[in-house]
Length: 388
Image (cartoon, rainbow, N blue to C red; front, side, top):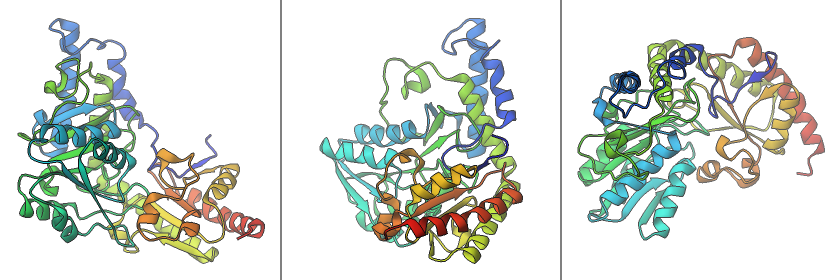
């Protein structure tokens, strides 16, 4: 594996050894149930409390506003379902965008089937949501607007602060949720800066483990639990807490912002180098997402290759020891064109030739050169075989 090049950090990241080190005591000596009153339980509780305090410190919020979850998908579900249930008396209208992760879109669809009304907003060709259109969509009975901070497929960083202001100007009672899973460590996600009421996080996108996340819930925001059976997390999410996971998430998040400048400078340098070399060596290449790289995630390069299937490219890259993605990593086994690219107006045939390269802290210039060097021959070979 040491000789392989991993360029799918938007799907998941390797766990930072410092994060592993922080977790280990909670698998061994500090293994107690944090809900108990005896010594073993209180030792675990202390770790959980410190983790919550650490996350709150990064987000500049109250520790009471942090709810630990099993990951970003659960955090999104809890935010949307929890608000819809708690505010059903105020209305059944929700607003989102066509660019959202399926954790948001499928949850919205389920609520719609159950009787809610959902407005799904279009985006422009770069993947941006227009704050004015969001404001226009908000009504007196709109209980929640959910727009992601940054898109996982094409890297577009949305104007969340403008969107939140627009929503509140139209209806101050409407809550605003943002899925910040991909944005953590890449942009400022402090809730007060963004103006949001709910914000989703996960550990495995920022060099933490899979299976743990968090939902920020602004104080006094109405939210009903969606997992019941215990009083954990201030009655907002039942189940014995994953203390080791919480410690890992807090450590990973803290490191991400302590090393914010260095990480993003490193990633943008590698991303820009890959894009430059690809443009020089390959024709029929289309960039997906913002062409202003300051408005996209520093590690993201999403492109479409004319005349070839993205899946075929990935298979050839894998044979060459290079890992990338054809779109949303959560549906990597799907041969359907990306809903994100289609929402941005990319023609379906071209969208089938999409490949996403997402670099990380563990990549270097030699790996980028190796990838850029391998691609022209792969594309030429596949185009020669293609019936298109």
